Length: 264
Picture 1 (cartoon, helix red, strand yellow):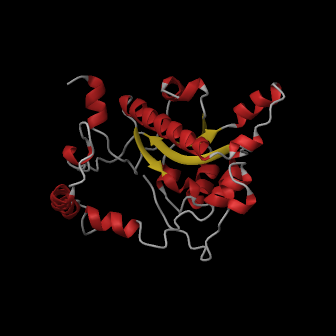
Picture 2 (cartoon, rainbow, N blue to C red):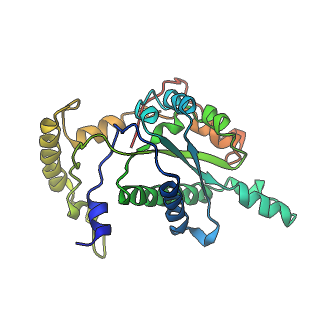
């Protein structure tokens, strides 16, 4: 097996980091790798903001549901879907952009590109011996995150990423059976036996974790996470409106503004 495959197949989510800075040269290589990743029509709808200052990382820890690993990691990267540069290009050509910004496909493109960029950054970071954990809760207090990052219109903070030298070895989580996620020619809808098999594997994994804080299995996890009413990120509709991706009459704010928690 080659080095790249070894790195990819050894991925772990790291939440405890050494008190050690990341060299600027390494961080620069991670960003270069991210920029080299595939993107749509070469429009490059991704920007990354590195939060290194200790006080600001503490602030983002609070905004992201008090996740302490954001404080411990020397660098917190925020990945944004970025159409601000596209707006500037349209302005330079005296071409309106507001009327097309709200098309749902732009959100799909932006989210796709952020996912590709973050995945590439994770692989690059881990190739240097660094550890990472994605943070979905950058969207928990999205409006405050936008202010903290000074984001202009047409830019959405979608994912965060803690990066640092790992101070733990939590083990590799078992994944779904290959047959449940890879198909040839057509999708196989008869997945119940495979999910039952994975439930047993995942349940055993949870029992064997030395810091076990969860019990159950994968289908229980999935069902609990999406239990109605699903409102983990209630500020997202308003974020989309404020940043130019939804009109006011499209925004529906949940009556109960309860906030959930999620990280990668």
